[in-house]
Length: 159
Ligand code: THU
Image (cartoon, rainbow, N blue to C red; front, side):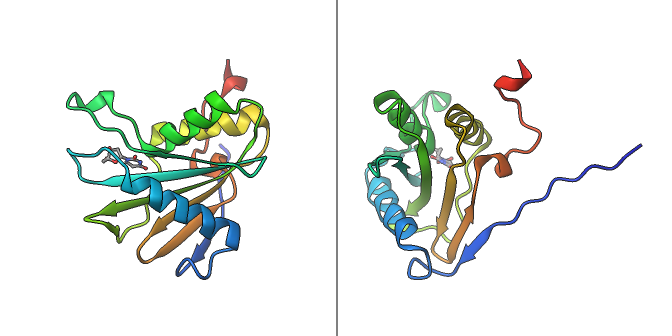
């Protein structure tokens, strides 16, 4: 038997002022997007902003449904919009935040498993890493690629 390991490091920032400018601009857009979320059931308003290769920013927010599984997370709304409308543009980064009662939530918003899988697909599609900026009232975590958030993942290479 051999023991294998998966390690990754991530950056932490205490506030938006500490973030690199491109990241903090993207966070601002994600906050704007969160304000337009349709989340009457959870009242957890998530916003995502995607930065494309051509420096265009595409936004998305969670869209809930009375039939719960029919809704979609902010990250996938933004990412699928980007992929649908700018299919030749590599995704450079995505910022994710959540608001409750109009305020950023206290815990860092980390994407769900389905969104991680969707980000990984986009990363593989363009063969370039996606920077992921995850926010909260207390600070930010940043990872350099989606792969880090989904070790031992299922990809097109597995087929
Ligand atoms: N949600 C997102 O949009 N993104 C996340 O990263 C976590 C969860 C949404 C799904 C649902 O509308 C609400 O937040 C509560 O789970």
